[in-house]
Length: 201
Image 1 (cartoon, rainbow, N blue to C red):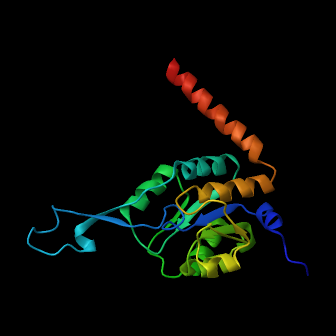
Image 2 (cartoon, one colour):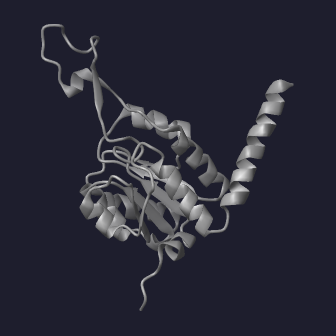
């Protein structure tokens, strides 16, 4: 049997799941001491700090385009972060799985919850902890700066690196393969024109 092309796999996708650190962000973790929780004379640890991350606006638009195009979205991450929870609410993600030690099992649980099959799901990752989910997904995607082992198993590699619009690349690729991208972008622009007109009134 011939292997399915990336475009053929993308045409089946109804749900896009993705990692956070190294995908929605550039992978860097920033911690600031939380002086209210940490005595001044103690050593600062991760538990006595505030974590913050930087996210790319293009990925925010990607989620809006995905919704308009009928593509459901969600994240699976090994870490737990209030910053991620806040961003997930901001993006209106349907599925949020934090603190996952087995991303493959997490993906299958979400697939079941969504009433889909694995071949209808894409997963976007960057490091080896993402491989179990990528191997189960019908369409596996790696960011441009992913580890070599991850790129080797991906069906598609994004033009941009993690934290620099890689999620937008993935959404664009899927919607283009499904013949929806131009109409979705037009609808998104029209939506914002309508919003601006309402504010102007």
